Image (cartoon, rainbow, N blue to C red; front, top):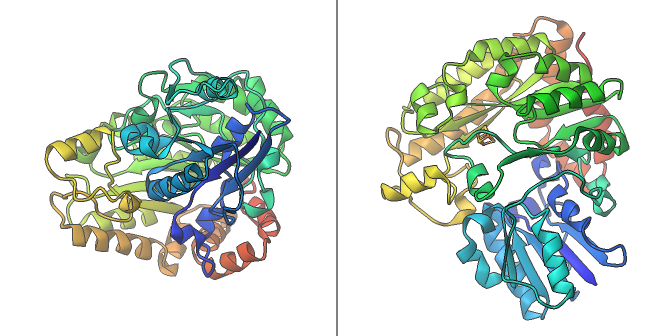
Length: 452
Ligand code: SF4
């Protein structure tokens, strides 16, 4: 059987003139995971449009397309094209799960929620020529799976080919997060077996790893055993966790010992009203300063995430947030305009209140205002968002933030990481086009070296 697996991309990511590095970071692990359920005799082509052109001259038996909100319209076009050729097309992913009725007319079968159990069920039905229209799996596990088909991934096209995911979901329920919508109807947080995760890590070449898990510290026992097992593997890694799990217990120390060098932390807002509105109770009353101090004392750089435009925000939120982040020595920050994704509680609230401004999903990229804001006008919200990025990443701010650290090595690492990430886009563009990302990776590993 000929199978084509596609991750469609936005036009911006496909420009022949300009390739931002953020689109060449991680390979499509989800599709490579599903590929492991196919037979060795199947001919599989995996295409990630973020890093390569899609060839339309073929006629596979089965086309598998992963859909997220901002690639949805493009994904539907590709699906329609292959269906018109007589190929069997299946669609799955976050957006399909949120809006099955929208996706369904573009597919022969759709998949709701995680597909590690439903995809093998579909394959059996498909080979027996009795596929169903909708697949959904209530029973969920990622234990005992076959190894991910990493051989299908074109490693040289990614800066971080060693991305890995050892859990699914998250134990929390923030109202703006996709998580509840994607996992509804079944378990919404579960882990791999520790020995299987360690096995997968051991097989990855090189030194650097990036854990794509929403919350790597969420299951304390699993994380603790994972980090203990990673001791002596000579890895450096990055991941994500919450303020709460950084403050409490000794997971941070264990992670650092195993090679953690940078952590994505969802601070989201400095305003308790916004945290309450978002049901992000695990952040309320938590000592952000203590979390930052603990991370810095352990030599871990911080990638902080912030959301603008929630109902308790005023015009001063942009400057206040940037000043705070710089004064705390935050290494990199990702700012987002609050975005009510379909099927989330945030969306339900906004729709009920008549506050949704557009259903053009291309604009749901956290860079555009898509709902009626309360205390800030949509125009000022957009301007404030642009200001935050500009202000946080100007040389003066980068220098000031770097100087907050105690040791010279930490200061230099901060300067190199932030400047390397945000100030050398033309160089990244050149490296991507000349397929030289593997030569830049040792630089990343050096920047992520141990501080003490
Ligand atoms: S903690 Fe993060 S991943 Fe978990 S529900 Fe909240 S936003 Fe989503």
